[in-house]
Image 1 (cartoon, rainbow, N blue to C red):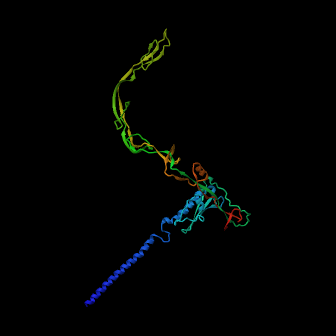
Image 2: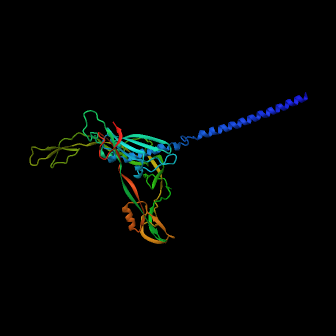
Amino acid sequence: MLYDEQKTENRSKWVSIGIKTLLILAFIFLLLWLVPVISNKFSDNDGTNVDPLLAGIFNTNIKAMKDSSVDWFINDKLPTQVDDSVRLTLRDMEDMKIITPFVDKTGASCDNKTSYVMVTKMPQNIYKFEAHLDCPSSGEKDTLVTFRGCTDLCPDRGCKKTEETRQPAKTERPANRATQYLMRKPAEYRNRTDWQARKWIEGQVTEYEHTRTVTAWTPWVRGTETTEFRPNSETNRLVQRRTVETMSPWVLGPETTEVRPNTNTNRLSQTRTVTDNVIVGFTPWSANLYWTSRPTESNLLRVIGQQTTCDGQCLWIYQIREAIFEQRVTRFFRYETRQPVTEVFYIYETRRRNDSTETTWSTSRALAGWTWTGRTRTVNAGSGRWLYTGWVDRATYDAFLRQGYAHYRSRTVRVITSPELFRWFNTKNVKGWVFTGRTR
């Protein structure tokens, strides 16, 4: 019986070990399954959502084609008749520097022959822009359509409303509905030669002295408080402002008999009493008096006239009276007055302009942003080197030759002179035009 119990105990131990082993294997299997799932969540094997930047490259490229064409197709470059179309291939746009070459999300160039921008004139002076981009390497292909009006594309024409007519047929049009053919006039090109020259610069080269003025400012310096207002400028700026309510100084006013109470703005300063005899009336006029000459009239004497009958000299008749006085006392006052005053105090910071002159030497006599002083010097430039020009036209190339340059190389570049044109005709036989296969 002891043997059976030991055997049972050993069996239980091995079962426990087996269960633990199975759990460990299951956990490892689960990890191996989860890792690819998590990895695929952040990277798409088909390349559509690997990186949002890559996914947006095609949209950015086709929009760049559309925007560049809108800037180029203005005024006389637009089709003139309704239903006429003008087309530029991507290659034409790159040759004319309308757009810089670009690549798709795989790093490869798109097809610049099948990719194009086409502009079609529609009624009411509306222009339809079709930007078609074909990128075989990435498998992306799409067409972006937008519309523009006359005010967007031909501002110099004033957008005058004109009667729009379709292109007349080359042959007589029948009375019933006729079939029209979409014809294509191929683009025209010419070859342009670009030139490049070079010049050997010996160990001793000529350098030219150039100067330029550098504008600098001293640090802002804070000033003292003042009541003067100054506007902000390059040399002055307001940094602090405060308002103070005060009273003006007391001012002594003229003498007056008016009695005024003392206030915050008025106070009695001086008083003076004056006693005068004032005429308050007169006695009655006296009886007639006589005088040989005419007396002087006043408020105390009045002339009645002259005798009308007299023996010898006629006397003047007058009357007199006396003034009745009364003593009166008058008081005079002088006041001081003042007014409320609002004072504004300012603190400014000021600075000074401190221009300086910089000097440099260059092997070029014309240096952007600098002025040649007329001075030159010869310096040791080592073993020498070739100085190359960029690609230039013939006139600029000849000017370089006159400056001591020598011919280096040339190239022929294809330049478009007339873009591809599409137009509807009533016949397929139009000189200079090719039938596209489309009818309506």
